[in-house]
Length: 184
Image (cartoon, rainbow, N blue to C red; front, side, top):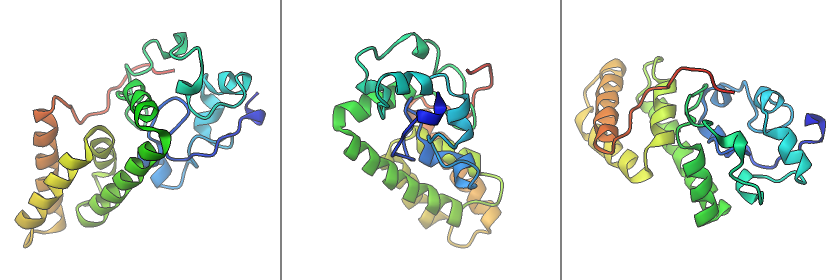
């Protein structure tokens, strides 16, 4: 049934994952939530989308949230699943265009973190931070780090901003670690 799956958005998936902030997609190994992607071929929600007229986001379905969402956010894959239902609700509340604009802004923040602060070992961490944290908090950490890391090496800058992101996230009750377990 995945051969009939049609999607137009590579930033935000059918089920509420922020694909545009996924390290696998950033490395060029996944085009996002499209029929050609590994994720779509393995996804139990894709056939449901096709049955319901190729809805673009599960919140468009009259049956959402259905049993497929029971425990969906309990574990992570290459990207955090923690906020799937929350992000779908936000996209529905503020409108998909506004949500996608926010995701594009988060992609810019992520690109900046990877360009200016990554020592080659923080891609997954930065993806997770940008995915789970609010843009205002991310900008605040970046502004502070920009001032404090002027004469540091890339490794020192990377360590410094990691500590700053962890501290800011902890203040909001966010843990910046992927959770292992049995997803789908």
